[in-house]
Length: 220
Image (tube, rainbow, N blue to C red; front, side, top):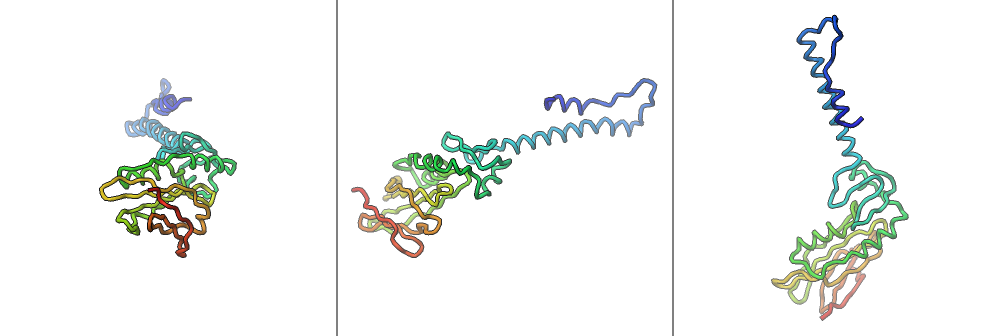
């Protein structure tokens, strides 16, 4: 039975056989209202069930059956989830056979060579590169440069890989943000990058113990 048919069935008024006494006006009101009330309850319940089975997309990504969308591709989850939050809060939410393909998909995303402002940079890293249900971090604009420019670093988690994709943009006075570094950093779960500086044309990356973990010369 379809939803409209079910609603019509519930809403149909009580019929009384010929010769049977009709109820009082008060009792008849209750009998007339009851089917309509039940119809509303049924429709609300069906709508709630449909919402749980097909929740609204979040951040351009949606949980549907046992797959989740990312960059136009579908990836299998470890099990079906009724709600996006249930998926997001489960540390083992992805089918482990899909992890290499997810990693490849994230590494294949092309980061633009420049951004008009900081908001555009953050929006891209969160909205386009970040895998749904996983994290990202920003070190914020840094004044640790020797030429007056500023740099900003974003790190996006690669699911269950102990890796992050790191992007660094540089802003000079009155200019847009230019991408100056883009790489995969391994060991992020135990030895995260906490500081980046530009010194004499070299980008230097430091961990929480102030140990140098990466160095790259900027192109002139």
